[in-house]
Length: 379
Image 1 (cartoon, rainbow, N blue to C red):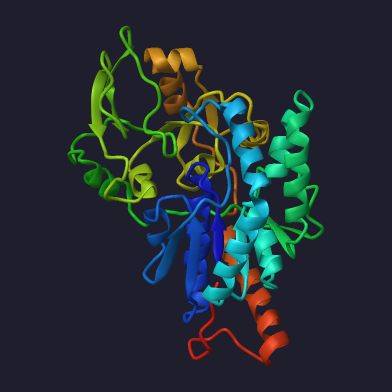
Image 2 (cartoon, one colour):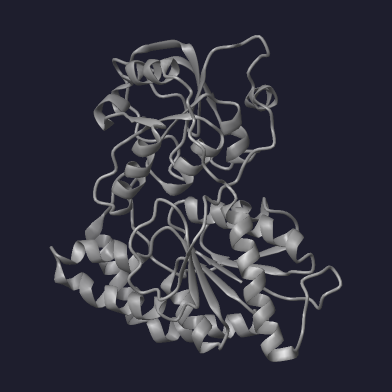
């Protein structure tokens, strides 16, 4: 069983990659996902995945893809913790009813407390934990401290953490195993992907995907935008007023996976986030990223991106005004010198989870091997 934060799409998309890697390893595996993220993000991993929508964490409350409302977020976490015991009992009952033999959390604290109550082992899969994120605000506001302590206690129930790159600190976890990037990759060629974007075969203009992970294409207001007519843009909102270039609009729930859209583009404009950065790297796409203030994960992400030399910053003022040309031209002129990066984190994590399930079944039922003829197992 997967418990997946609904904060942004990065948690959901990397868990999708992990589920896709798990299914060939254990063909009889039944997967249940508990999350507020859109079901389609998990269902793209293949058939037979049951998605149960439930509020299992708070994350951060955001008016858009870049800003955080800390006051509302604190109140939401305080209310969530106040109802903690009922939530744990509810989820423990859900885990038992589903027959789960392993709980994977990315990274709701509730998942690990509920799994412990249900007497089912749990494994964390993440590049940050919420106690670390929220603790950064406690220096200025002590009201965060009880929430941090509560979540840290819940995380301590996890058997181990599968730690992804671009990670923060994990003070609550006793056993940590580092793994490579876990990321979804498109199987389409650039030419095929561009056709799906609606570009003509003879249209060789650079293509730019404008994407903010569930928040559309960002806050755009462009009365004095640069002339970008030698580029073509793909976004998840209507063409901004005053924007001086061709704009292909896709719905918020596009008919093709996000990575297939990315495969047809040359540059990605978006926010700093694990999913955004990892997909850009995996598909060898240059990136313009906007500043994202007040989120402790961001400096870790940017340090990794700057070390790898894969992107450039675009100020929010220039982004909103449509002054994109300097950044786009600089990226297109830059030498495509991509450093070696491993992308098999999903496969590495899947192998580790199979080991955990095997150990659990051997403890309870005797020997078991993960083959197509194995007894049906539930995750």
